[in-house]
Image (cartoon, rainbow, N blue to C red; front, side, top):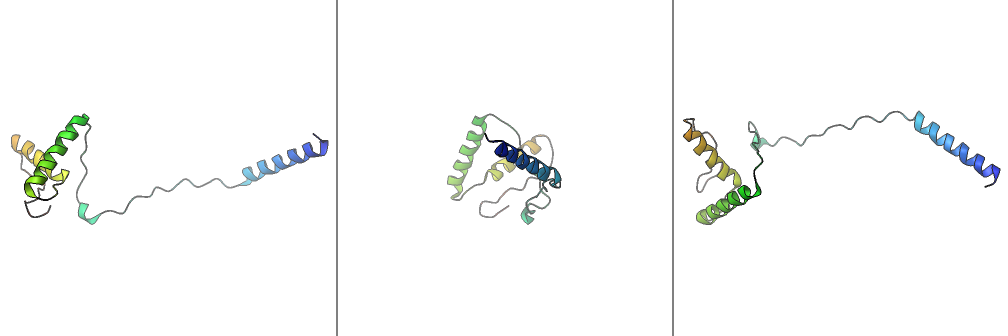
Length: 105
């Protein structure tokens, strides 16, 4: 490699290094949150980990209920019914909102 080419590469690397060092530090990324949905005001998500077969069984119940009512039944409805049964078993008020056969939550 000719001497002047090697010297030119070293100067270019030095200039790039100086530019990187001179650049102001990047600001940390801002966390963005999705806008709050009005229909979920005052509500929380309750989740747990179970074997896959539990989800399949819940889905089967949901589909059976959908056929029975002639409309799409939401998983939320199935879980609300399950929570209310649990509350009742332990003498607590049944407070999980349940959809009526023709109405909504």
